[in-house]
Image 1 (tube, helix red, strand yellow):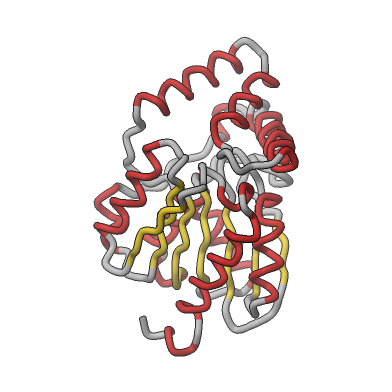
Image 2 (image 1 turned 120 degrees about the vertical axis):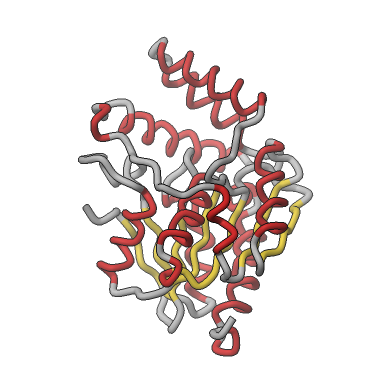
Length: 261
């Protein structure tokens, strides 16, 4: 299966946008346009089980992204990942380093991360709502937990729609078609040598702030940027500001003079 996706823009460099686990490709509306206007060819996709991509077989998300690149004839791309999409981006960079030219990670997850008590408590509450059949309450829990204080009502409603869609798709899937984890361990991340921007939000759950710090300490060409205003989903909380941040970073790592980095 080829992931549902959109293409925008033209240029010598390709940028792939990977959404968070509570969203789908609609979270990138502003960034898609900004990056296309900046001269990139931009691809945004729905991972399997999100948005318009169904779940029809066992799958590994990083391999699905690789297959999408193959189908589009893209040999190498800069990858932007939000939260769960950031984890997938890291796995892709480990499994297929020749396909990734740079990483911009917004409040990313990471292979091998042990969740904190706060994150485990959230998961327990979500499971309880879903087991009771109260999907609406599980959706509201996600909206309240993941969006930072700068998110407006339009952003909250969009996350509500995207998370509800993900639950509707995923809860109907038989166990044999669940995702198969990529065989990537935390120690493997040190092999990622491309330029990396690890962004964290000061208003986010502590897990993701710690992950950004570790990535900057572990990866040879990584830096950490803290957004004082951000919760977990900066591209929805301050879309224009986040799009500008990504445009500046990618201009520096996809320009002809940066090709040998």
